[in-house]
Image 1 (cartoon, rainbow, N blue to C red):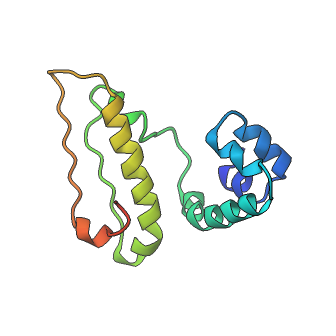
Image 2 (cartoon, rainbow, N blue to C red; image 1 turned 45 degrees about the vertical axis):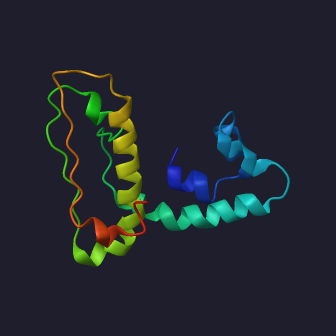
Length: 124
């Protein structure tokens, strides 16, 4: 199912079933204002995902694959305002994934974030 549709306009019953057993299930306890508020925020933040080409690449799985090589995330200057939430999400997923890979004396990870001050307050 399309994530953007599910999070923004799908019937709340379908969304509740999808989120069952997760922390986000709490959006359905009590008032519908919480769900409406969450959907408003998600419609703004998830819209950039709709422009991504479909494929099998996963930032979450990439660190655990042998010989996975380098990963570069780049953008044009005119894209920075819309890319901030997306890059922030990717950085969070990437760093969390690296921290969950088993220790190895034969593997080293390097993370360079160029122009970090430009991302403030995005990467706190």
